Image (cartoon, rainbow, N blue to C red):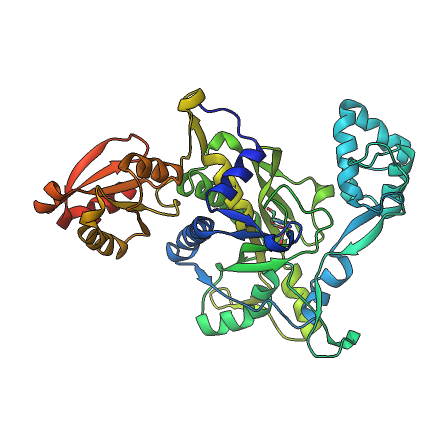
Length: 474
Ligand code: GAP
């Protein structure tokens, strides 16, 4: 039996089982900041490594890059982030609370359902995507429709909506004059674009090829929330795949499939919880020819998980113009020069982490016999093997088994408590295999392997143990 998982179940589980803690908790928390605990950080590393394996290691057309968080500020001018990377901020004059006007309007449209079409004629807007409306229009609709503050449900006294740039600013030097302003990167993508000439020159790759990058990015989100779903500090996993203009839509379609397959075949995400949504023309970003979101059915509804955008030659051309450097590619076969088009699959590691937790959360049994566990693929599980001596006095032998196994797998050694309690702990943290050492079997060079999902047991020779588990993990 599996009941519907709620967000509070995932938050509770994460905090109780060493996955995610509130950041700076002893000082009362820094709102919306989260630390990944001992099991959380391992789980996150596993997801990241599987992504690198699938999209870099197993392909002949991909490379990895690690560019700086702090880039020359001209990068963000060229990419339009300084001028355009903003959300419409609106304040409730009474409570001083801040909201995203477009999100409040989206909620209104959802509430109006079929009647929402009336807004188009009433306010002269060409679509029902508030993000694409002008700030004046968003303010007008907020006021005339008497949109309420979602926290108080009483007040609708709004300021004018204004542009709020999402980039975190800092200073490069000791003084804080504006000439020293630099930014924490809001996406890893631009680091790949500005390194494109270096990668091309040093790797001597022929197009099509791609560059992948994982690491931190920062956005001063107006309304972060839903646990680790939307945060101000996060890890992005981005690919920029360079191709010939005209072949971009075909390559885009291929990447849509590759990303979906990764979710289903590698991370074991259930197919019924995933859907693909193509952006309408009105919704496309300024740089995009086509964009598809892979959406996941989170406990709070369908939301974007992975964006796959056809960014055309917008970024490379923008950097060519700002830096005055040639970023074009010479195609030796057709003897012609062009600026490549780019397909960008972009996903946030933290959001993928939440997806994995939500999808794997399982409850079995009823009442007192309820068993809660994460049905994780062994490849993803933070600890692969839990090693325990039946009694403490054979601990030294059990530690030898731990040493043997930890050559190949992330293991945990546990000799505290009764064997039943230790099995329960092992189930709780969702370790796929448990290896028990008892003196009779150990004298014959054997140990017992217990499988988490079936709870079945098998006696295995120590010389074959690592290989046996490796095969089971596949
Ligand atoms: N380089 C393109 C880019 O950054 P984006 O649409 O801004 O595109 C891509 O973001 C993905 O990042 C989205 O699919 C979404 O899953 C995730 N995302 C965006 N903002 C986020 C935030 N503040 N916290 C967590 N994930 C976020």
